[in-house]
Length: 493
Image (tube, rainbow, N blue to C red):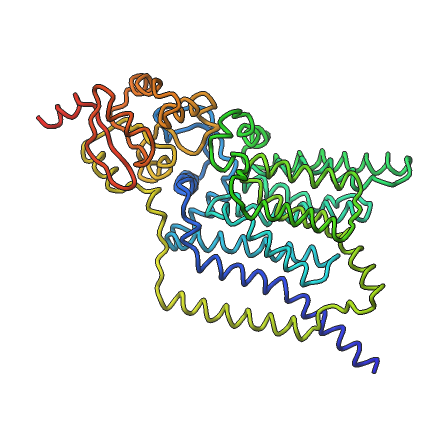
């Protein structure tokens, strides 16, 4: 009887260990199957282009050499390691390479989250939280560096939360994780910012003498983490470059991923907020003030910038895991019926996912699917025409900047908003979006523009249609091209 019981416990342990792997495999196959949806942000073009430049020159950029409006201006690439990874994968497999990398990163993120939550929650609940986190993040899962850094963010915050839960200090052995994050993406500043709130979670409820000693150890760890994030080719410039984006003021409300959440129509994030409130009320959760403040901080970030929703989705479960686990354990002990998942159920689920993975992978390879970038980000025909005409200074739409860089054409503006600054990009948007159309002629003359390449359904082309000295020469569903009438006449002769 005891031997049978021991064998059952061992089998259940093996089954539980298999679940994060199965969740990761399922996430990978899903995003591989919908891989084209990962290729819909033109920033992917210049990220890959910079990675190729780094590989070709065996050096990192310190100034801009892709625009004609900011040539030679100081600029550092805080995502250089991700850019190199994307460039290598693209060189090897075309667009399939970045898709595979992105799918792997999401899969690893989901698997790490399930594994971290398993320390406090039953496996079904851990899996549910991971699935909800992925669903909430769908709008921002793209072939870009922030996704490659996502599993590192989850592992780092999970390590901090684990230390706080046990009223201890994070191990300095985890500091290389911060260095890796700092080389992958500028979002590592969030990892630094969360050290303080996590420390207060650990300190809450301790005796005053113990609080002082523990606070000192957390402070020293924070200093070491700041030093670790500077272990990059750029050194301390990495920290400075990562914070520049936060100084763009009003511009952050214009760039879609930095804009605040819009509740005009019901969305998944709104549902998650309601669900979080309902969970707290239904379960009667009692959280310590530092833990409440931590959840409010992550919620405020998500409300302020839609790109922070994935941080909310993946990190809030880590903050709630221990209180929820304690609450569920009490209720199960009182009911005496809350047995965990049977090992055979978990094993069967894992087996089904592996079969599905094999079948899906085989189907994908047999069909020879070619991944293609979203067409509305790639004005191929319009740019071909401009190259044929010999246009030198193109006033391009913000979202076309990455594609122009990929074709080695100097840009007016692109997704590196921190390079151009708040005023420059705001003037551009105000002029082309119809908010301040009077700015447009001045921008065209100041920068000696000889052609424009703007989005077809934006106000900019309609403004240019009525602007003296400019003539529309091409239009399709993606882009509209205008040239100076004098230049057009010269070309005709």
